[in-house]
Length: 147
Ligand SMILES: [Zn+2]
Image 1 (cartoon, helix red, strand yellow):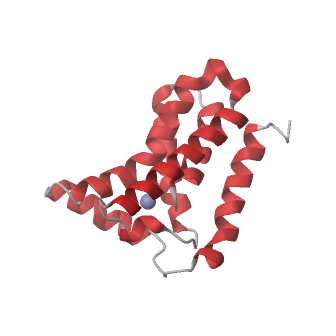
Image 2 (cartoon, rainbow, N blue to C red):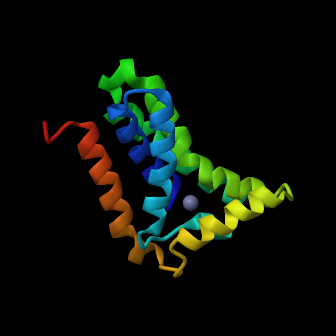
């Protein structure tokens, strides 16, 4: 899944977590649960050229902007929310790091990530509904629509 839904779900988790460590751990777990869902993902064939870096930067800026908008009222929870967001982004960061650094632990982690990740090559339009649904659920949660 792209960065923005992971960030929004991390923020939603952090908004309800009692402390940093639980928020971080649940953020990591959320990453894998979201990656199981059928989705489109530009991160699957990432390289370190300009176009990939632009996509990552735009995705990160979009996620940060949406969190600023929808989590504005959680100012006292921001550190816990950041911990959950970091946890939610950590798996993809480690996968990216493993392509730069040869390490057997990173390699094992990548194999695990690959096993739970949905790799069916959906097109952008095929994967968009699930991506939007995950984002909408997280935003709805952040807005406390259900009380
Ligand atoms: Zn992932």
